[in-house]
Length: 91
Image 1 (cartoon, rainbow, N blue to C red):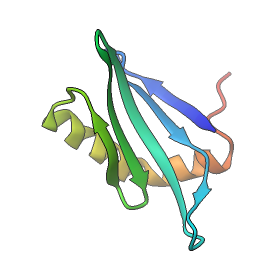
Image 2: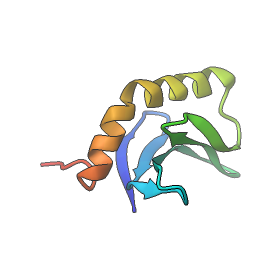
Image 3: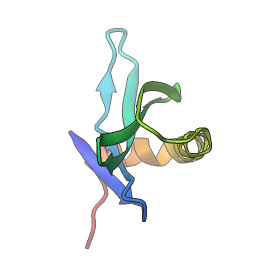
C-alpha cells in the first residue's frame, strides 16, 4: 500500500509505503518522489531507514535530490509513524 504525503507546485508527488519486512525481519519503508514530464516521470525512490536511493530515473537535479534526502532524513520518524497508522488522515 502507498500513501500520499503531499504534492509540490512543480507537480512532484511524495508517497510512502506501508511497513515492510526484509527476509531478516528488519522493517523498512519506501518513500518516492515523482514528477510527471512529457516523456513519463522523474522519479527518486528512497528506502528508510537506510536512506539509500533504490531507484532514480529522469531529470531531477542533484540539488533536488539532496533536498529530498534531507526531507526523508528529517521526517523518517514521521514516515514510520504514519505508515504504521495507515497513512495520514485528512479532514
